[in-house]
Image 1 (cartoon, rainbow, N blue to C red):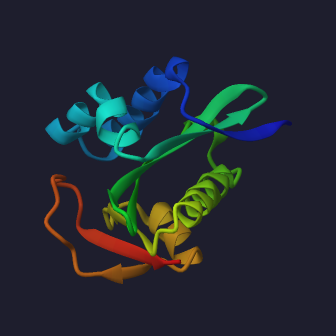
Image 2: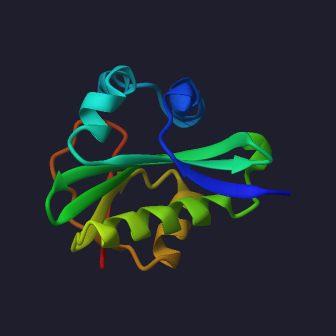
Length: 152
């Protein structure tokens, strides 16, 4: 099995969207802000200085995550998704590692994220990386009921 983490390539845009819609529809619903991000990936995530990572297993996209620039010192980790057939293989760890490396290279001081307490496996992953719960800032997502931060 060959596993590789790559940065955004336009041919994978639809997979970024479909992987994220799959978990959103399973646990919640796709919100207007999700649709806005999906339709404007380049303008919302990439052009301001963020990145999207993909995890490839034998050249097949198995997962994805986005890093959105909040400001020069803070990035938001968002839209972490692993294809159901690849879940349980610790691929999300590789994507989180890529996000942390990216933020450090950008000399960020912290990575923040918003999530839902319903997503226990995701929260366990974040805690494993020493993300700590912080007060929830105002957010565009109805499903978000927890905010976590990792100081670099």
